[in-house]
Image (tube, rainbow, N blue to C red):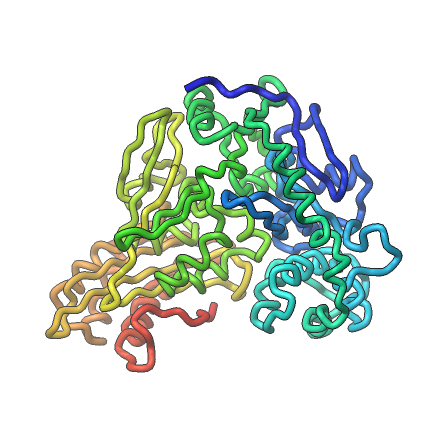
Length: 494
């Protein structure tokens, strides 16, 4: 394979302006650049960790199918290096060149959706993204779109009233992003020159690979580089922990990692597929995963974060690994031109350590769809229902024999050990036994053999141990209720 040509500048579009940057650091955030370098002060800094939504902007990108998608993202944890070939839209762009407010802005004014105003630009941008995709959203769609936006003085009801009323103001014929769509697609395609981007030297170097093969070659040559997809975790390494992440390889723009397919009862998800992109397919084929994904961060986080990244970072409280382990998922790992496939549960070795060789990366995850007769559920326990980090998460997959005994059961937890981990002793106590409350309560005593949870700011060890047991009991009760579907798909309480 011929080496990719190299470009030493970052190219993207800001509102309506072409931007070319040669001097930009690997850890330079979009928020800082907008406010300090471009004096676009409408984008605010609140939490600096992707929780409050005050920094929400839209990022438009071409999809592998050739369409243009705009999504709300957290500028505070979005790095500049991830923007090559994208269209960044700030709140200043909404009114275009006219002298009237955009319908989203006008609705917020008329329905008293703003008081101090600090959070308002973020709410406006989130509602703007929703309005473009769904002009007449339901209350549930509005609430999901605003999960990642916090307000502490207005109260949410006026904002919800504004959201319901946006389309009454019309404006689609003059909306800048809708009017400019054809032209913007052509401009973004023109930025795609097939080159690798390399900027900086030594510890201040970052790379945007030209394609998947180029990424494999880059990482094999620089195995200690920090790989950044959605930056929903790595962003906090910089903003909260002041960690040095250089050199960096940005992979969010690699179309080859965006593959999503269903074949022979297996959902194959490319490592670069975001939670938002995976939602519809997973919710359709494995209903219990829909509510789980909708409780991972806010919409901005789900637009950026990837399932592959959630697996690759090996966090003991990652939300997707326990569920995927319970589903007997497998990983494809790649190093250079070589690939290998392993069981997901074998990928996690110890805290901060995974079965990944230097220069090797997660390329895809393969998730078997459970048969309709199997019972599968996932329960996430947090201090607040939405946009919160997991204290304990349990995933359960059960097969019953014709006589009502447990033919097979897989139980996996997050937040209970140094890695996502199966409850082998509990499983052993259940297999071959009748699926009854007495059996379940007896098996609950085996949890101490599987887990020794820690106490931290999210929960005490005693609380986690008790919750883990109770989640098994809950699973039993729901799977024996005639009113509960085999694969639980309703919204779960925290």
